[in-house]
Length: 252
Figure 1 (spheres, one colour):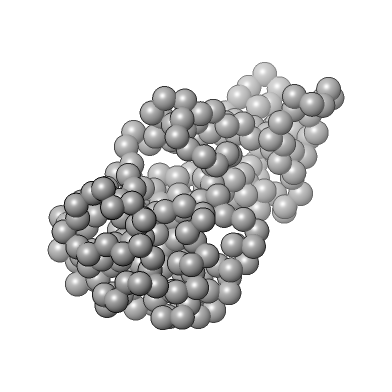
Figure 2 (figure 1 turned 60 degrees about the horizontal axis):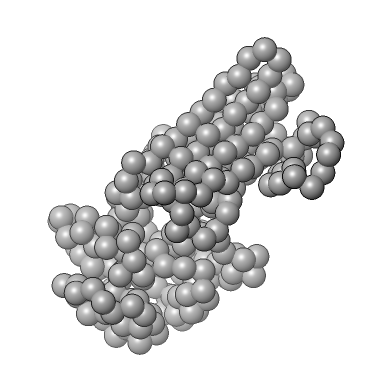
């Protein structure tokens, strides 16, 4: 049985993951970390991971960027594997992820769902064919009105997967409102929509002369991300130090 600490346990994703883990015979949440205490949990909750004295095999993080520095420091110190799901990290924090991975196992993914990770693979193949044929590439992501980072981490990951397949020669354009000029052929436009209770939708558009090819992933509930996080935690427990991602968990 894998023993996990839920970092951000009283957030929406933390609660979904806790409920899923409660139904899984291979993993159990033994403690939680959250500054908000307005929810009753079947495990002890601490304000910081540093205060948590419960033995565990892995940490699942779905918190916020402000809490990530302390999380990584503690995981590195204790050699505690961590599934890092929080998005919107700064460049300095991403460097800290690299440092932490030299001390313990770190699995970081912009999106934990099977569908999105498969989409990344499909986009690479599509880009190799369509970009040389002159197709423009645009990406539109939609999320609920409570999401604070834009564009989403998933949107950036999708764009990165395309750019990687094309040799890294593309730039990202987030806002054309201040420039009156034609789009550059070597750019990927990324637009963010925020409204209502949209869980998550990502559209990738390849627009050519007289034809358009679109890829869409729609999440109808947070369960798809929670299920991926739980599987990632079971995979990561006991792994040696290093960086991992969902491609290591999901075998295509």
